[in-house]
Length: 115
Image 1 (spheres, rainbow, N blue to C red):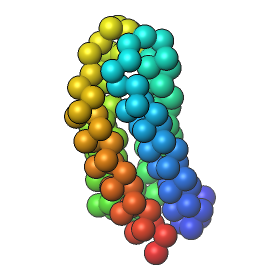
Image 2 (cartoon, rainbow, N blue to C red):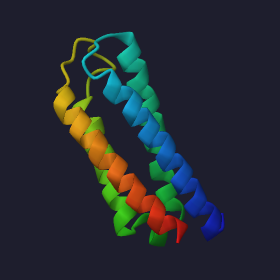
Image 3 (tube, rainbow, N blue to C red):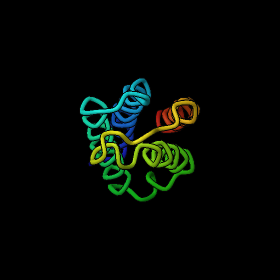
Image 4 (cartoon, rainbow, N blue to C red):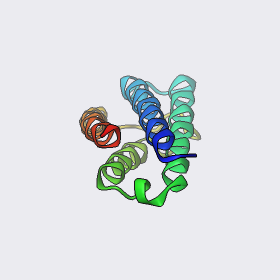
């Protein structure tokens, strides 16, 4: 995969990941199968994004990419267990804050990758 294509793919997969974060954030207080399914979707998007960061270590290790990835990881940590224990409590205030931080980090990352 050439560098330009990889940059575009990271932007697109980052957007998919951010969308799945937003969807899960909206259901942070809901317990049950729907939230668990959204968590699984989030994890799949996170995994795909991470895989693309390994395709070109120079791009994958850029500060903006790593900052976004860290926000994604932090968000995911809040939801650990919701896929196996449907009654797992999630701090919705913290979820919203981290979503907003991830959105900001995504915008900065996309800006750098587009340049």
